[in-house]
Image 1 (tube, rainbow, N blue to C red):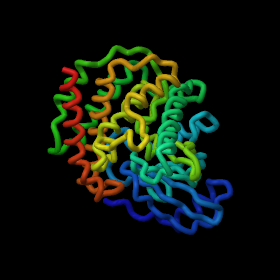
Image 2 (cartoon, rainbow, N blue to C red):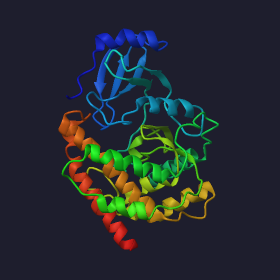
Image 3 (cartoon, rainbow, N blue to C red):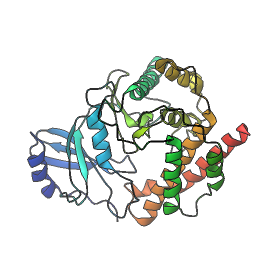
Length: 342
């Protein structure tokens, strides 16, 4: 089933009873972006808010954990990593029939195109990327125990854990789209030894999951924490740098094929170097593995979105159906990356 319009009449009194100061819900508008958890703008006499809910229908195990998002953003309040204020988390038997949370609405800029055509000049483009880099480094410096997230991930090798998770979920959502068996086998045989690094990992850190100030290259908030966990920081930096390799002329809006130098955008090497400098690192070994893992993980996520579209449960069904082709693209790019390493 597709996601229906929220029942405003049922939702309004619930929000007034559970969010201090909330009054007179006037409008509910669904954001067009987003594939995982449907998100809505709430306009009320007391201001604007954002509601993010689980999608309707049958869901994959451990997916769409809006309560996990709510917990991590609540924990990050007041840290060097900016997040919206969390206002309320519902139970599963909410007025809309599934779990949701409500947070403050932040008025800022979201950049959907990583080439930043709307930026004033190359200097602003460079500053936007540097602010994104600075925020990621700050995230990985946070002590998970200090902010109450010491139990936010399982112990052991993060990449082994993640590979096991996504290889188990992939068959549950598999359709006749692409065969990733070779990629999975390569990752299993090239798994780096656990180096003991632990940080809070966002899991989907990219430009369009950040809100920037309207008038300057400052990050106001990091959004979409559904895939966050305590784990290895190199997963985030590799996932983001994967965007440098994805074609710009695709649904991924990557930087592949873009003349980055002419636009003032950093190269992958410069971006990684800036991250390492901020974190006091001399470099990142096993880089091909981290990149290949990122391609695999994103392909598995896209496969889940595509399967939900076929089953009628996608947040954005029309767009979701294109994700079947995306799995082919991602697995092909990963194969080329591995071939260069061989």
